[in-house]
Every structure is written in C-alpha cells, then in structure tokens.
Length: 302
Length: 302
Image (cartoon, rainbow over the protein chains, first blue to last red):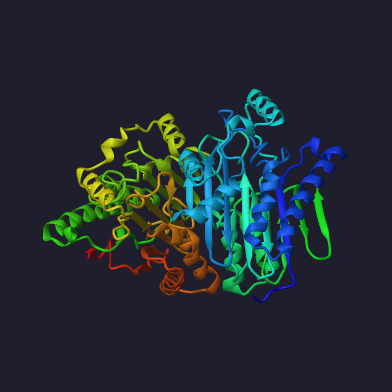
C-alpha cells in the first residue's frame, strides 16, 4: 500500500475562559503532561502505519481517562448532579461514523462510538440503549458515580448555591489525525455543559456539527457553546467551504469561525486535511491544544 | 411589515417502496385526504400572515396524528416492540432550532421540538428527560402504547417471525414553508425504521442532516435511510451548494442527491427557498408529497 511520510495528530482539551486554578504552574504542568501523553499515544499508532481512526480514538481515550478534562472521568455534572456523556467519531476514508449521547455508565464514550460504527448498522445510539448495545458487544459498563471527581462535585455544588450557569469553562476533548495512508479521521468526547438540563445533547456527537471527517476536505473536532455549533452545522460548513469554494483549510476555517461568531457562538476547533495542513482557531479567551508531527510536539495551555 | 404575496407549503409523507396495501384506491384516498388536510391546515396559517414555522408545525402535527404515517400515532415499532420518536424544527429567519429524540410519551414530537426551541437554551433534548422538560412546560404526556396502531403491531410481529429488517417502507413526515414575511422554516418527524435498535437516532432530529432551514439558502426536510443522510450531512450540503457554489435550489438539490446516492443512500426530500422555488426529489420507488400555493393544491401518492 502506498504510504505517505507525513503523519500528524492534533488534539484539543476545550475552549473557554480559563479558571484561575488553571493558571498555576502546577495545573499547567498537569495539563501538559496529560496532553503530551495523549499525543504520544496516538502518534505511536500513526508511526506504526496505524489508521487515523485508531489514533484519534487512542488520544481521546487518554484525555477521557484524565480527571483534568470534561470528558469521561472528571466530566461536569448536570442539573441533577449526574454525568451524561456524548461522543462521536468519523472516518474520512469511508465517511462511516459512530455516535453516542446521554450515556452515564461508559468509561470511554469514544470507544462506544467506535463500537457503534463497527458493529451497528446505525450511526447514533442514545442513553441506556447505547449502553446495553456496547455491553452486548463486550464493553464493560461502570457505575456512573465512578466518573465523578470530587473537584467536579464541589464545583457543581457551588454552582447550585449561586443558581447560575457556568458558561465560562468548557473542556470537551477531541482529536484529528492524518495517517500514512493519507486517511484522516476525527473524534470528539464531552461531558457537555456544567449544570446542563438532563438529556441535553450538544454538538460533539452530531456529525457535521462538532465532529466531521472526509478525505476530500478535512477532519474537524470542535469545542464550545454546542448549540451554536449545531445551528451553524459548524464542522461540515468548514468542509463545504473547502469543497464548494475551493478554499484552503485555513481560509475556510476563518470563514466558518466568522459565521459561528455572527450567530453569537463562542468556541474553537482543530482541523487538518490530507496534505497535512493544520487549522487551530478559537474566539474564546483560551483553548487547550497540542499537535505532534515528525518534527515537534507542541502543547499550548493558555 | 413588508409582506410577500408568495406563500407556499410543501409536505412529505416518506420515501421508499410502496407496500402493496398502499396501491388500493381506498388507501390512496385515505392518504390523499390526510395530506390535503395537513396542507390546508398549514396554508391557513400562511394565509393569515402566520409564520412559516407555525405552518410547518401545524402541517406535521396533522400527519403525526394520522395513523397512516410513520410519525406520532401509528409509528413503527423498534426491536423491543416500543415506539421511539424523533423530530426537529428550524426557523430560517433566526437559525433557531429545536430537536427531540428517543421519546415515547409525546403525541406530537414536532410540538415538543418547538417547546425546546422556545423554552430551552438547548437545541436538542433526548429520552425521558425531553419528556419531563415538555411536561414541566405544560405539555401532556401520554401512555406510549396509545401511539401503537394494530396495523403497526401486526407488521412488527410478522417481521419478528421473518427475522429480517423492513428497509423498504419509510414514512417519515415533514414540511417546509414560505410565509408572507419571506421567512422559511422546516420540520420533520418520524418513528424511525421498523425494528430499529432501541435508542437509535436517525437523521430527522439532526440539524443539517434531515432538517435544515436558512433564509439565505433553503428549507429542507428529508426522508429515507437516515444513516446516509447523517453521514452526508444531507440538508446542509444542499444549502451549502446553493450558498458556496451559487447554484439554484434545483441544481443544488440534484447535486446533493447524487452525493447521497454515491454513498449508497436511498430516500428523498422536499425543499424551497424564499423566492418560492421548490425542489422535490427522491431515488426510491416512490415518495408521498404534496404542496399548496395560491394556484393549486397537489398531492402525489405513488
């Protein structure tokens, strides 16, 4: 099989306003460490001629398992004090996709999305039915409370007292990758918005909104105020501007962000195309992101 | 307020292979009657300078209440013998949207989607949480079994014995409208695919897949094999081809259908733009559709 020497993995850990606690050197070090681990894990797969799909899943799994991000373990709590997780993956070489929303007993929703893509004729499964589906295909279900960290529980309790929403901090995670076969893929995973209504589904598990990949255009993973990314069909809008206006990834990205902002939406995204071009943009105070290629490993936490 | 003399409402009642029972004159008459009722109901709103959003909701509500279509009352049953409904609406003048998936105790999911758009800061709510949300806002919940017709129950039992899927007949309903204020809107409602996995979400409630509306381009409601409409981001793809390639509604529609077919997807859609152009296309054996404007009321059931 013809292989491409260029391999690339980009990850993000959410866009928003940095909480004060995140600006201590200790916190920065911890985030750096987790993001580097995710980058190295995914990149290892790409180096061994593995698929971009496997690489994004592996990287996102690491971030889900870290308590520092709002995905998997350490996710935010909804109005009822429960964790409800959403995730999606898309394979740019086949346009196959898998998506899961509103699950509470799955440690790694990104892997559940992969199970659905691989073993179901459907793209999207929700709630306990999604949990039962992956259970039947060999995935272990966990106690939902084991996903809750004391840090998130305390934040949620403080928020309940203030009776306001926490719109400032997001922490969705995602990854996009290019493999040696010139295939690209995308994955996104999230706990959603702190204190969200139970049953709320954001953009992460919506193909074309928070997650999209197509070898012909680009792979995108977004983060931010999900409702605006849904209404602007953000990720596919970016891809469509490349395809139908013949724009470069960078210019299409800028246009898509302007369109999002014109609706009042805040957030950011990571994207790449099969030539190895990258786009990383956000209109929030900050976005956690990092990338790794043959030359460098970069992590930005500010 | 400046008003546009052109008003238009298009509806569909699903695309697929016609069951033999649908080709009797009695069945054709019954479908005709239900579709005309839906058209007249929605058109009445447009005539009184009502909004396209209200018109599409009213038309879809009539189709949901008819036992003849796979939406609301008379929906297909999933693998467990239960009804699970999905619906979405989008307002082309504001790009606001509401969506509901996996609900079983709501008679009119299209109205639930409207409640979510109007009363929630979220776009999409799922399952019993969506039910509880609309209940809190004054909508009555019903016994899920009251949505099941003996006809659908018998079909489901026959299917269980054959142990195969019924991919031939769809029956999603939808509507797109143009009002006197030159605003357009879209609504889609469905029971999904007969014998679907519990928890499966199709394209209908996914903004950009089965439902999309934007005054700048078009309003679209799709029907067919939902997974392909999700993976091709069908409705937004059609809109994007108008916006980014300056194509007419008709040409963009043909391109979007080709793209869907290239993935192997079957189905159809209805669409209109704010100039009152219409597009109605399908690559299945048949699609139920109809439209009404100042000159005529047309219903096609073949």
